[in-house]
Image 1 (cartoon, rainbow, N blue to C red):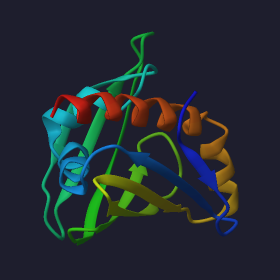
Image 2: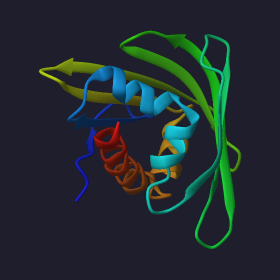
Image 3: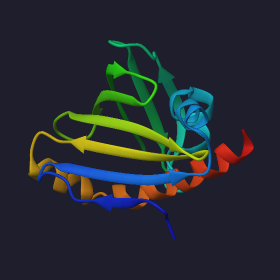
Length: 153
């Protein structure tokens, strides 16, 4: 059972929250370092076969995934804001319409880090389309695997 919580946001948003038993610096490192991203992102549904990260304001990122059936999908975007506790980036999937804005914050307390992500889509229709893909289950699996990666750091 995933520890990922889906919270209520605006009609065009998906809000996710998850606590990790690791300090913020390690969670941020695992979420921004290509070799580490490849170890957890995708959960059991897909393997990251390429992770490119240019971690600077105006820099881009791109992740390419391969599903067990051999099919591939990808998404990427541009970093708009980078801080120790907050990152804002765009996100665009190759196979879905529109571009979203993802705001990620990490709050550390007593050696644990709470991850809070708000994904704002261009419309509620696009948000609903993304929810229909099973993204919540995939995100939950990915963050469960991130837990394992963090334990190894």
